[in-house]
Length: 145
Image (cartoon, rainbow, N blue to C red):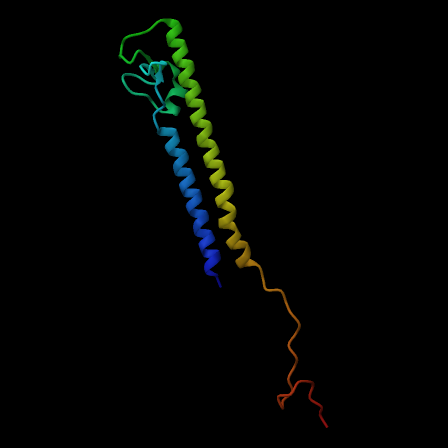
């Protein structure tokens, strides 16, 4: 028989695992931040055009970064290399954050889900045997004469 507390614990575990994995997947597809100068002006995007790509795309193809925010306009080689390093560093950080979130969700949620199964499957410990009743309903053995 399941108790309400164990069922609630199991549901919380499922919510933590599902929510954590969803958050990790979201971190993988959220666009990376743009590189800004100290004045706040955009120096470049981690992707083609006026937008930044997500961490997976930038990590797979670091050459997609765009300097100056204008498609087709290439900056100096040093500026392009600096932006690529910035974007790959941002992508690595976001990938690490996604991995940490996923691992924490699994480490916290799975034991909560499994705890219910262990508690339900544990057999009851045998206690002292109940006293035997005689045919007259009193405890003890029946003496035949």
